[in-house]
Image (spheres, rainbow, N blue to C red):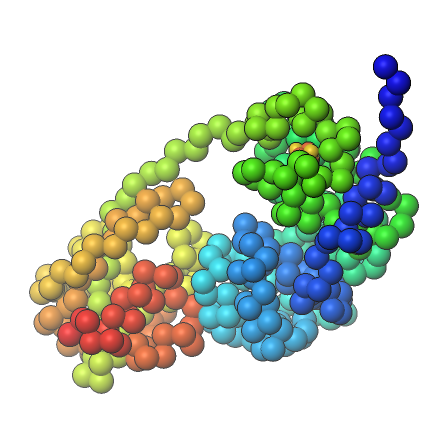
Length: 351
Ligand code: SF4
């Protein structure tokens, strides 16, 4: 049977993108390295529709590298609150500082230097370079990995080193000679709009002609699922102490680990551990409703309690501490369960 000769992958993809792709995203107007960088970091594990209002608020407050580097970390975290994975915000802040110190206040636009900055892997570096300079550079985010794994009918979990290597080689082999910015957006749009995680719309796909998974009628078999990860369950105690003005004691979490760098109610695996951190003993408390909170790898069962007998001036905290009016909770970065507890105080649900 005669084979139909198809145009190159990139030509078909770009033709489709010219007609159907996303061309009015806020970070595309203008597509500066700083704006693309912030958008790429926000878009990791987060949908475009969720990111847009965060991006716009961010750009109003931190319109450039300098304003981000000079801002207090607490304010940066407060602008991130709700997007999750706070290490991303801390890395943006640290990387901005490094650009001021070592790169004359600019994001460097070489893949090696860029991917040496905190929080920027090779795919993100290439996404920034291609979109802000129009130089073609291969990207391999989750959407692209999924589309390529299906197009190639590639066996093996896409997080495995050997599979990653094969995908990088393919991503590079498919690059066009020009229109680097549009191609990067196009291949990301293909995964986000057509070759979606569930129910890919193969009938609208511009590259279905040589998609192996589609042509073998095995789309649902690719990409190979990730081997199951173990989620552990852990119990935590949290203590809420209020002073005479109704303010609540918050302590700063260590920089790494759960909620690293965020302000939190004093927390530990037992109430005894919490009391020891605060220099208190046998605090009388009233238990509040248990909160179930899921992080990527831990199922947290949080047991909050309101202190009923503590004199605020007796607290001798071994970590950095502050007293916060619950009505001002939006001004600093707080974990979601803590923000919800403060909101309940503010609404009078907790007396
Ligand atoms: Fe994805 Fe279907 Fe297109 Fe193949 S044909 S790349 S499975 S949308």
